[in-house]
Amino acid sequence: MSTFLFKSTELKTDSTRVQECLDALKYKGTIKTWNLAAPGGEPVLSVETLEISSEELKHLIRGCGIDVEFAGIKTSD
Image (tube, rainbow, N blue to C red):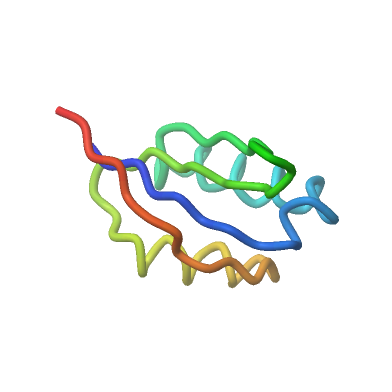
């Protein structure tokens, strides 16, 4: 299981579209959970997955019209 972190100014300005996109991916089983937080004012999207890579996930999110940049990975057992 991996948790991927993404950053984008769009995450703060268009949170409804972000929510719709990620809820749809969760419903399809593509992702397990997601969270949008703004530590220090900068929005960070964290997405927990089981089998999808960060590049595949970035492509899917961008397919929803949300321009995100990969910011890091947090792995767990």
